[in-house]
Image (cartoon, rainbow, N blue to C red; front, top):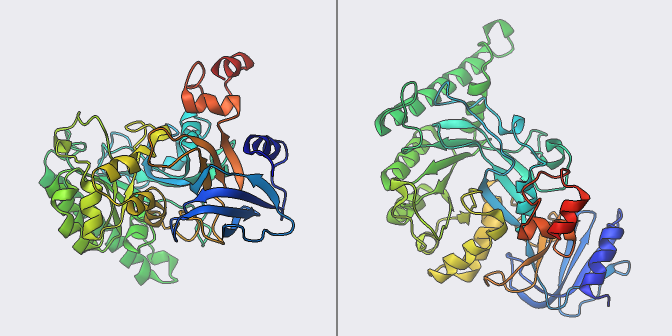
Length: 430
């Protein structure tokens, strides 16, 4: 068998061809769905996972073999809340702006995307900020290597672009008018907007085929109708326990799907969250501070939510947590009592479920996209490094490559956008 470094170099020079199978042999494999394999093989073909094989199972006759002995292979990481790409959504003109799209703002050549690849992230929910009650439409991206944002988009079954809606409550959106000054007014504004969206939907239904009766088109209300119809998930920034309950109250009233983000006080109201059936995307930071309403954030949140039966995932909120260090979230959660299986699931499949992408990614399962990472040790170890990141069967990060290594370890030029590095910077950074 080829040594892994040699094989990696070979794969860069000769990327997988159509219908060619590539077998990563001898690795410790963490499928997430199914038991860990101390020694196994991952077979990928045409951008999909063809098989996960235990032990010395026979390989496809046409497979190109990569020796992965001593390495760990697991699904690519899913970050359910990030700000890579430097995109902005809503502006200061109103507190609720569902017509704003992060799609029209993100820079896919930003260095932050390469940092995310270096951290093993293969799928990401890129969000506008939290300074509004509703700051716009989020965007689900596969971190393929691409020149323009279209190269990274994920299509829904109906051909539409995959994404959710970003909402927030608490202190972030409390400002001078037209923004709310109190929590009560914030909830009232949200409630009124959803009522307007329901009325807009009803008018369209009553109009039927009579175009003369259709209401004037409203891009913001159209997006909220998608929320009311369950087609677009609400990703809701919330910290304090009473703010969390307000979100659940609104979700029940208007019957929309919600993922609760951050939930610093989530451990205080885990039973209520579980009863509502809401998923939680949490952030674990080792240097709390900066926001009074997040003062009770705790490493035990993952443990408490897991025990309550809540679907829990992790996120970076990059730059709050550096995407390159995302795997630390699982280690910190396990140290505080969360199960190993639950923490690894939270890094992968749970996040995919929150983005409605569980049929495509989040586990090493035959038929899913070949999104995976190669590690040099156990994912919960602080010493473990991401060696390679693969998206749909294509390598997008290779720590052995000098330019990729620059994104991983930093140095001169690491903050420059993709394509801006000259030969001198690559050489120094390597």
